[in-house]
Each structure stands twice: as C-alpha cells, then as structure tokens.
Length: 148
Image (tube, rainbow, N blue to C red; front, side):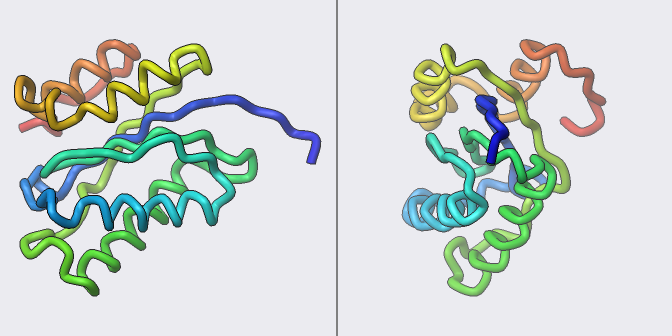
C-alpha cells in the first residue's frame, strides 16, 4: 500500500451516566481485550488506561480504518465481553458519544505519560473537568448539557 500517515489519536469515552463501574481488579483484562480489537484492525496501539468511569486510548489508525468505525467496534465488542465475563458487576453500557483528539509524533511521549498516570491525575480532577479541558485545549465546541 502506498498510503502513509502519522496521526496519533487520543480517544476518550465514559461509562453510561459516568457510573464508576470499571473496578480496578478487572480493568487490565478489559484493556487487553480492547488492545486485541485495535490490533485486529491493523492500528498501532500506544496505550490504554482509565479509571472507574472512563478510558483513554492512544492509537494510530490504519489508513483503511475510520475513527467512528473503530470506536463503534471497540464499544460494542467490549460491552459484550464485559457482560459475558461479568468483568464489572454494575457496568451497564458505554456512553453514546466519545471525544477524540489528534497529536503530532513529537507529542507522543508526553501523551502516553499523561494517559499512564490517569489514577493519580483523577485524584485531583473529575473526568468531566478533564474532558472539558481537553475540548477547550483542542478548540472543540461542545454542549454543556452533556456534562450535567
């Protein structure tokens, strides 16, 4: 293939109603499962991490894969996986939408470190506040009603 890209995405999505259902004990299994989905789509995964109510994925998409289709596949497949394996007792579903931001290759290490330190980061800041800050930093307009 003669298509070349280098676009790093940070994808963020929450549990339905931002419920704190992703308990620490099974998160790693979920992250490995999602990593397998990403690998099967020929995308390059850099890191997955998260806390009780949301996850971050840092990846480079294969040129044949659209962002929307990747996120849909991850959410549908992982939701079924969580329920089949009873990974998180109170997990109902993922939220409908997601946030996605692009980064240059020069920002990759900083971004990976940011995602790696999610638990520490969220001792000081809610996921809603974090997401609003990311939206503002990337100059994405948003509707406040989705943060209530």
